[in-house]
Length: 136
Image: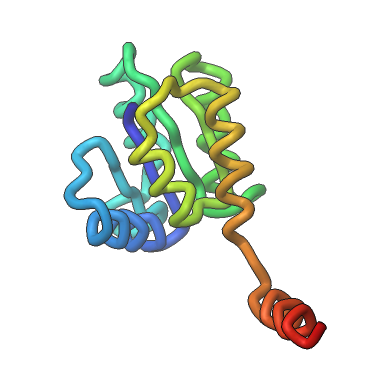
C-alpha cells in the first residue's frame, strides 16, 4: 500500500514528520503541501503516483471535507479502482494505516476510519464525567 497525505499548506508535511518520529522513516508515504510554491499542481503529482503504481493499493488522505484538495482528488476514485480517498486526516488514522498488515479494501478502511474517529474526544467533558463518577 502507498499512502499519500495531501493538505492545504504544510499540514501533510508535518503529519509525515510526526509519523516518522513515532515509527521511523516511511518510504511508502508521500506528503504533499497543496498550493505551496513547489506543489501548485498537486492533482497532477498525485495522479502520476497513481499511474506509476498500477498494481498497488493507494490510500489518499486529505485534510477537510469539501475543501478544494479533497474535491479535486475525489475524481481519482472514479478513475482508478486501486485508489481510496479519506478526508479528515488525523494522526491516529495515519498511524493505523501505516502499521496495518491486513488487506486494504473498503471494509477494512471503513473500520480504521471508525476507530480513528473514537480518538476525537472533548477532554473537558471527559474529565468532568470522570470527576462525577469518582464522586459517586
